[in-house]
Image (cartoon, one colour):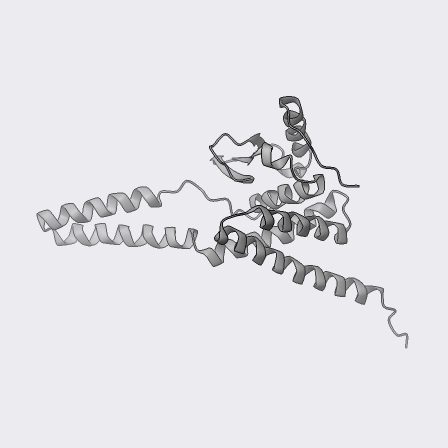
Length: 217
């Protein structure tokens, strides 16, 4: 039976963080950490790159404790899958380069140096394009859907049956849909749930085909 937490305490929080660390695949345990979120109004769960070889999974434990254990597990493995798929946003050079390029362009307009103006505008173009690609909604949605697929696979490594893994992640997404007031974020969860249902139906059809006896000749 799935259990829900009704209260939170520092001891409970530390126990939950330790539990989640045991759900990390062995190949990630040396460079992925799990910590409570410290931002004001943080997301439920997210990842942040701390360094070249260090990723931190951050959790809003107050919201987290309101979810069922199976829901937590699959949402956690979704973030693990993002790490494995190398889709964690990095603190890149793009914003700094864009600011430098814009500042340079304004300066070169003043001194009227055509070559330096072209270089500054080129820097703006490259950094702006990379920022657009990083924040492209369709790209980030597909990355989330891919992470859901991998989260299901990770769950089976930790003893879940395929139907239960799909059911737990689907339940988690339904809960997030109900609890998310912002339409853009809610629509993103809805599209992830729709993709998950299609994937579950395909998995069910494959399992059914595997069970059907093959004709003997």
